Structure formats: structure tokens, C-alpha cells
Length: 325
Image (cartoon, rainbow, N blue to C red; front, top):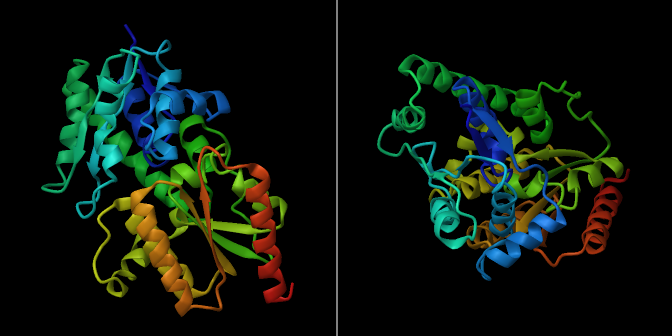
């Protein structure tokens, strides 16, 4: 029997899906994703999630609910640490419990623990436990693990060469041809924010597409190679606790210091605790680099597209006037 594994297309999906897709496919399991975020899906998540949950959590819950009649297992891993330095936001750690005990759907949940803080081999242990759960031969589990690692490295190469995350995901998991990286334009903006905000067209109101139509080339924190991010560590009094937050603030420091962009936009979700700190740190840093315009854009389930577009157009016009193009 070929089991169907459901993967909600939100949160860690945006950075880990190629690895997960490669792993489960090599094990002979069918991967089913929840697809694109929609208004109906968000409304479902809002009804089921805790009232004080942030927008991405509500969206994730909606994705989970959309899979309940389509798969045999839900893959909702408990992701703690993948880089041996920082941990993910508590919502990632608690997500399996929210799904298992807080929702009306009762599907078996694969809540594999990913935590490499003590030793890097714990990543292999996590993948091995999944293979053993499905009673797969050891050799097949090993092959699946290395397929996952190769897919992860391939994603990093594509992002660091300038490709956008959605195009890289489609190429690695669906075989779609890669478009050319965004060409140099007369205006380049860095859009910083967690991948599950920036690259979800529904949540971000298709912000990347809007910038393209305004003639703006966009860069994101995923496009910055890791060695460049590490070079910013000495500018911080301490490392941020949370992985995506640490990534975002270091990318901001890189773009501010290198001055290779004409402006920076920080896309943040209302109610996100870590982001409230990151946004303030970016704002304070922006005072030290007045030549690089900075705007913070906060969104939640009540945000309207017209308001976001107005602020975006005004910011782009201001940057163009400042640059004289």
C-alpha cells in the first residue's frame, strides 16, 4: 500500500519542502500538499486557531484542515534546531500538539523531532525514525536521507544564484524550468521577512509580483549566502534566539552595510513576538544608514490589499525620487 503523506504548504514548507519531497518520494510514499493559500483556507484557520495566534499559524491550521480527507498521515514535525546554533519560534515546537489536540480533524500525525543542537547526526536519526515507522529497508532509508540532503543543497545553490524561492521550489519538486534570475533594473529593493510571509502570494498580497510590475528588482534574505550572514555577527551584541529572526536581522545588516539595494522593506505579521524585536532592531539600524530608505509593512488577516498597495507605491515613488530615476 502506498501511503499518502500530507504536507501543509505553509511555515517550514517554504524552506524544507524539497528535502521532504525527495525523502518521502524515495521511500515510495506519495506526497500530497495542501496547495496555495486561499480566503476559504484562512477563514478555516481563523475559526480553529487560538484567538491570539499570529497570522502564519492561522494559515497553517487552515492548510492542515484542507488535508484531512485527502491523506493517510499528516507530516507536522517538531522542528527545534537545524543549524546547531539557533532554535525556531515556539510555534514550530508546539505545532504538532496544536494539530493533535486542538483541532477537530483526527488524522495520524508524524511529529518527528528535528533537533541538532547536541550533535549533527540527530538529523539522520530523525529521518531514520520516519523510515523505520513505515518499515522501509535500511538501505532505502539511507538513500532517501541523502536524496533529502542533496535537495536541500540544491535549493541553497539556486537561491544564492539569485532565483526566487517559489521558482526554486517548483523546479526541484515539479521539474518546472527555471526562469532567468531577475534582471538588473533601475531600482532594487530588499524585501526582508520570514519566507512563509514573503513568498505566500495570498498573505503578502503578491508583493513580489507587484514590485515586478512597478519595475523593481527584488532580493530577499534567502538570496544572501550564509558566509555573508556570518560576517554580520560581530555587529550584534548577541545572536538572536530564533532562526528566522537571526537570519532576517543579519540580512538587513548586510543590505544596509553593502548598500547594494536602493531600499529595504520589512514584511512582518501582526502579533509575531520575535518579529516585534527584529522590526525594532531594523528600525534602529536604519537610523545609522539614512542613505538606504527603510519601510516596515505589518499585515494580518484584516489587512486590505488597497492599503498595502498604496504604501508600496508611495515607498517606490519616494525611492525613485531620491535616486533620481
